[in-house]
Length: 150
View 1 (tube, rainbow, N blue to C red):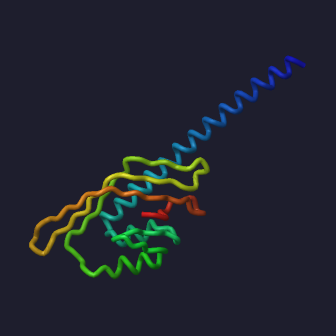
View 2 (view 1 turned 60 degrees about the horizontal axis):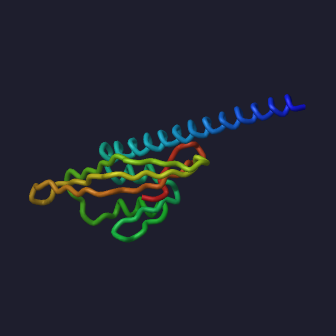
């Protein structure tokens, strides 16, 4: 009986250590998925423009905070971005996450890092603003990641 208990204890220890490794591997995989999504988001903003990127990567229930106001929902976001009062020349937005984390369940994650927004003003001068971003990501039913907060 002692031998069976000893074998069972060893088996349980081995099984539990394998589970931890699987969880660590999953967390790292999910983090990498979010980082790749974040990089694709930034690349699209540079290639196709800010509005198209922000609409494309938004979840249906996304919330965008701009100028101390919340824009709630993908349709409201599209309307907000399409109706900005002033369009500037050579508008560019780029960013790179400095940090990513994901929930143990793999359904929510977040990133933060630095962004650069630049444009050419009416005198031809290039204006550059730098800041910090924070994005919350939610896994969608199809397995993709969309932001729910930016």
